[in-house]
Length: 319
Image (tube, rainbow, N blue to C red; front, side, top):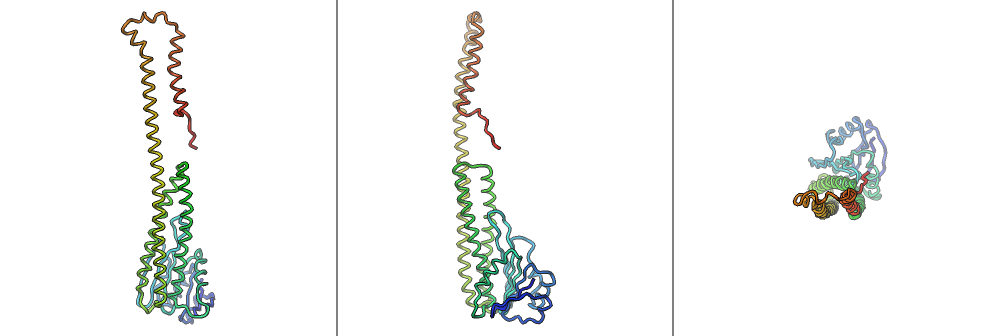
């Protein structure tokens, strides 16, 4: 689908590829939403932009800037839910002094609509300034992602402090992996904005160039915030490992006590055998069998009772 937006009066209409031939590319925005090959070819023909630059990349995570003589091509990313996935929606923006072309999927239409609301109702917005509106809204959406990360990070911290489960560790490692991807994307976008400010006056207005400074600062701030959350998750893992180490130390101490107790029991129970060896078996010839059985049973049962009270023999259900 092709939408034609007049930047002079913000009027919007849906047109067919055949209608592009008679359109004047003066302060217009050609918005392509999940375009067909015919629509891409028609836009490429009227704008003189190679069709390969208008196709959405099949490789996920492409952030790129191409500065041509009369126009600039931007490959940007709109992040999905960073908490649950690494994927992002690609968007292409081609702008010059006279026109803007955007190619995107329908999932990011709400972001594009917000950018349209920022367009002036009383004067003409240059294509480069509309490009700024689009990129600025995409970057602003990153703050929503950061709010989700903050909430989940706080929840994970509480779970680690109370009792760490295997599922919590899986969530931590998955979230850290997603945050690494998010942070890498932010770095790429920050570098793109930095280079975008080098565009010549042939395709970018001076006001738009100044506006991109704010976007660059926002991306820098977002990178720092993501790094902070990553450090918090790393600290949570360290707390969990410390708890495991403490449990192991307590287990070793408990085993030391058990070994000492069993050594005492073994020494006591082996004493009659020692006496019998040195003085002869006749010393115990008249000993009642019941006494021997009770002594053996006591030496076996008492350690089990002690271990049971220390919770060494209790069954733990891990389901």
